[in-house]
Length: 141
Image (cartoon, rainbow, N blue to C red; front, side):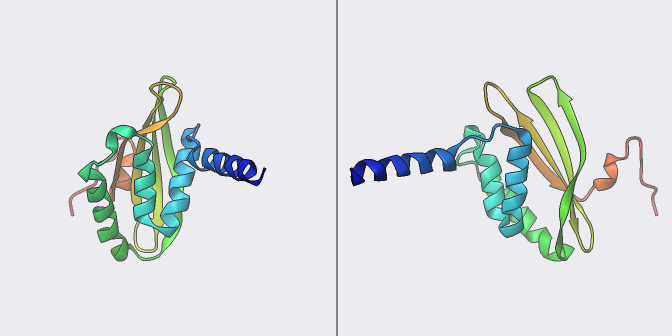
């Protein structure tokens, strides 16, 4: 009887920890929860939502680039949504401002739902938050 209960507990635990994220908000919220603690864990998590990124060297490159710039930005202060753009019901681009003491970063998540679950299609980050102002062109100094 104890073995059966132990097996049931392990099975239920497995379902709760490996459950696919069902919404884009769940994926991004989980990403930022992990990001507060570990950039590497957050990046690994979001790329793991898409099986085609498994073993991709580009994931390590993203982690390296973020980890190289973070010390220059000061303390992490949070994030907020800048825009959400949908193409039909299965493709969305969500842009965040990631706030730091010195300057913000822009994170862009492209998410795609080919069947029944959302997955990362593309991720990029940069310092060009000003590009979110449609039609804005910075003036040369």
